[in-house]
Image 1 (cartoon, rainbow, N blue to C red):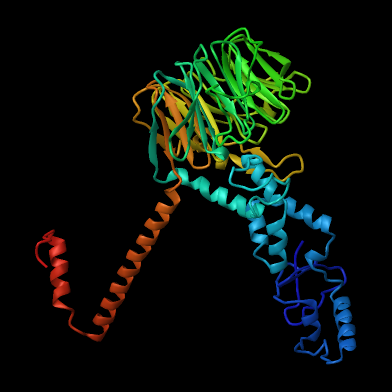
Image 2: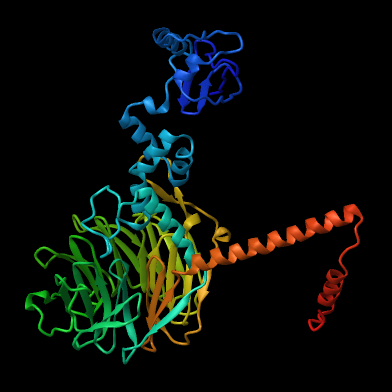
Amino acid sequence: MAFDCNKERGVSSPDNCSSICTEGTLIQANPLSHYWKAKGWKSHNKLGNQKSSNESVPRDSNPKQDDGTSGEATASTGGVRCFTDLPAALVCEVLARLDAKDLGIVSCVSTVLHTLATDHQGWKKLYCERWGLPNLPATLNGPLVPGGPLDGKSWKTFFVEREFRSKSFMGKYNVDVLRGHNEDVRAVFLLASANLIFTGGRDSVVRIWNMEEGLLIDTSRPLGGTIRAIAADTRLLVTGGTNTYIQCWRYVEGNDHLFHISGNGTDQNSEFRLWGHEGPVTCLALDSLRIYSGSWDMTVRVWDRAHMECVQKLMHADWVWDLAPHGNTVASTAGRDAYVWDIRNSELISLISNAHVGNAYSLARTHLKDVLFTGGEDGAIRLFNVSDVSDDEISKPVATWVPHSGPVHSLDFEYPWLVSASSDGRIALIDSRKLLTPKKSSKGSFSIKSVDASAVEPPRRMLHGFGCDLFSIAIGADRIVCAGEDGAVRVWNFSEALEIERRAQALRSLRQENRMRRRKAQAEMNATGRRPDQCSIAMKKNQLKGDKSVT
């Protein structure tokens, strides 16, 4: 449809035209014209009082006549209405179809649209699609109100801050080394909302660390086996290993670090075990209703958190290495294959055969249900679109990276960053932002963009220099936690990266401004024919010669 508008009077074109008006802009659509123009205007009332060049809209001081004139002007424009005059439900539906960039543009159009776009619940949807519903930090007062702001902030502010903070992983960092384990560390878990890090390994002991200060908070008694998996939220801590059971600790009210795992003088009901697996427990995960566990007994078990009993048992064809739940589905890797299960009926939805050459050791999912990352014994990391997987075709990855020369033991995802830990002693950071593109349909919010192998960007950053096998990794808002064979837990702190970059940018801007000022002064001297300062000439010669002793 082409657009047309009267630049002088803001009156309508022929009868078969439609009009769309927002505060500050009047756009009229005419299917017979081949161009469109926009005229700025403030309101319908001012339009009625404004005198045009041909005086088609008369000016009158009588309020009643003004009202009549406004009505005539509205009628003459073919019923022009503002976007905000639409029903509230329709306005919300239109805004809900926009992505973050478009919502930001809409908020700049006018004051009214700024208020609507800023307070719109679409920001909550956009946030949860990337990072999920956030856990409230302990510093916030009161519970999270569904759909409400966090700590007095709007969802737009919360989204913008988190998106901006995700850029910190390309900046400078500090490394803290946490020492306490006597042997290699096989599992780490980062609970950023509670400022806690959980670690466990071959010494059969679970340790809790303060993320900010790097101090050891609590240590469990020996559990009688290698700890291979840890998962936690603010209500429950679970660990598993070669002793085949799942060790659990409930939240202790009034405890600053949530759990008391040492077992000294605590409530006996806060610690318990879940039995059922017949082999070592290799992976664990939690959601609000369930506990998920995978084992070398070739099963994934789903446990009801309310009754603490096994409600489902999913059989695999090989040892289970890793798992990741999402909504009513859970993905798992066993042997070389990757599985996706519907936990409502224990049905296998998708099977990705031969995902890697060798075992598929690691798995990661985002809050986009069709996105599946796998890491394998061949050192490769692959991205699969689960919705495209069919039984009749060989599953082909959307993208493949080979950043490691050894097996990829662990993966973790924090939008847009995928991090991997390998036995080659290196960590890879992959930016998946360009592979996730908005979908302009009602079936889903995001899809995976099909790209050529040559278009896949290599890892944006590699962290290395450890000289030992790395077995587990976790990523938070501005932290990366990793541990391996040497028993040390390393924490990369990127919290000051953006501030350092801002200071460096300010310094570069100041230097650029000084250079421009000197060039301008020199140009003015040359234009007036004045003789340049001899001291400046001598200093410049000394700089060219590299002689700093002469001033």
